Image (tube, rainbow over all chains, first blue to last red; front, side, top):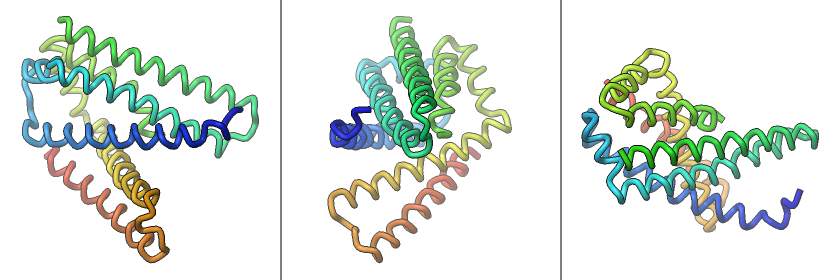
Length: 113
Length: 94
């Protein structure tokens, strides 16, 4: 694995994505604090507002990157068999990619509908 | 780990809630089942603790609070803040 050459890049990615996730989460919390029980229309309009759509898409991408680096570090620390490690990492990558595409599709469909 | 494993369910609920008004009500009903309320509290705790400890690590990366005494204090601060925020979430739920 080419881990040593990418250590700094991943470290930086983890922190940049973390900063974005943190800001977005704080925004989400403030929103749900002010509007705890939205109606379907309010909820739909909020998510499909262009600025919110873009911010959510970036959130999903940041979550994928952050989740990948974090889960990979857990695997590298605790799974020592190379074969098993490859299998688990592949599964995680597939699940994360699948989740990301699924979430983006939901955003796109909601925006179109 | 919990945050990773709860992703599919959260995305499913997001999709359901944005489908139509009926899907939105169904998603709310699912969220209000006992076991999901309980799971959401544990998940909220995980996220809050992760958020605060992440901020702590950012400060430590910048060389702030590296010495042992300060690091111990901030660790306590982070753990308490995580619990307090989780309590606030439960209060918000009720």
